Image (cartoon, rainbow, N blue to C red; front, side, top):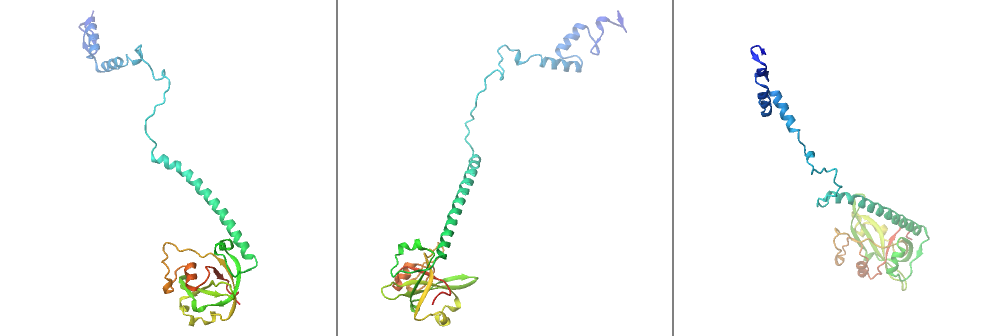
Length: 255
């Protein structure tokens, strides 16, 4: 049978006059029409998969195993672990400090409201800590000729000094050191503050105290020049022949 001059075996396969056998061979070799060739390649690519192998083993069929990478924990993880530990330690310290401070204030308030004690003739310096902030009184004569100034000490923006005067008590009672308070620098000379130089027998009311210690920025005292920058009770007592006992006078109660 002829179709437009071509026999059935020469019918147009893929746009050209080919026999069926040659057309199939062209398909296998990828020489057919572009669309058919592309489809043939795709079918050939996916015609075989690893699962077709009888020895194939899937990851799903294997039991789970823990794989260790061998990497150590980085510094970031260490920092994150330290944050709650540090916060807990600081919180505990704050609570303990608050409790200590509350008890300390209560102890000092109790001592301040008690009636003042007469200072014994001889004071045991080792026991002063047990009576810190305790109100006491002592009688004697103020030795203005042995006065010592600690400073400069700033108060309300003005330079000045703390006036330390030995109190010489009668009989076999020891001499003690009295902090008489702060004066401005312009009153450094005794001649400019004669009204504060009490003569004769006086009674001093004050607080028995442990003086503060120097810090890293405070220069050393020079007692040989009578220059003091902090209250070194031992130095001052040795210079004036007193006991290392420090009384902070309560203003307006000397008589």
